[in-house]
Image (cartoon, rainbow, N blue to C red; front, side, top):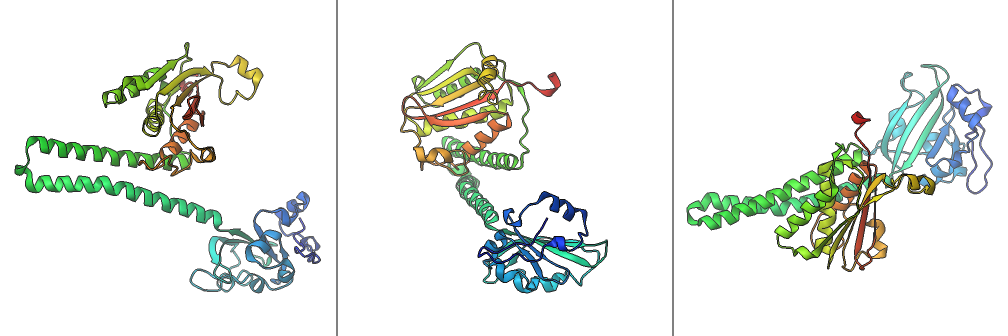
Length: 392
């Protein structure tokens, strides 16, 4: 591959690396690919055996704000004056041409460009033979914006968790300290009320910790699904009964099940978690009747193929939860399943629907959001009726 390139202003290309014999098989392979360095998404800077820059692609020019025409032909240290976070000149520290002969490069690290702008830098030393002199220094540059977004997301998660934990823990601490100090002064009813409050707040902390663990597993792809036979109609019925027992009117819920439903194998605890989140959103943020429709459906992966869907009409189960409230604004629907999205200011961490989506997708299913016929929000998730591997 020729790594010489031209600047955006049309400056002539620098000497092509192919003018020198390729010391490694990778360079010969690159030449056969015929990839222009300007097509690479990351910054690429290449210096020859004398330390002169012979390639400075468009991404490198964008990241460093140095035109390729100014960098080509200059010494690497002058064209790319990098410093570590302690202000030391990176090229003097690493000494690619005069350092250890067994060194093959530098791992990625945060370095500073002039003006203090951070950039992710890694380098590779190309030698003609092991422990031989350096023939090329290949430097990769990446912008740190993606990492900053991740760090901001983590910081926001930590701040949200700290805020959500503070309230119940303060309550638990206050009530327990009061009971220990003044136990004899309270009646049995007062003690019971305090202990019930402590118990409820402890449950709240436990739920939050469980949410954090779920997020960690979802983000790392380690969310385990333990499939068992699940009666989805009975599961929804249990949640409705719990709401009725807690004071919700029974006629606020409408459960419709289309029979026959295919056998569903899923993780019952995680399906309960999905149903709990969706029903809680409908009850808390919606209005009117909460309708739950359970129907057989085509497999999420096969629905796009009409011919296949016709023969797989009962290869999945769909659950639709809808209400008659104001619904979700159109402009917010693409953010519903992201972290920290809240449909209103009435409490919550904004993590529930993110976890719901992760659980459904871990089952191989899909989930969508839209507007219900009654005007409220409508969530629909579809689960394939797969069976555990040990039964196949």
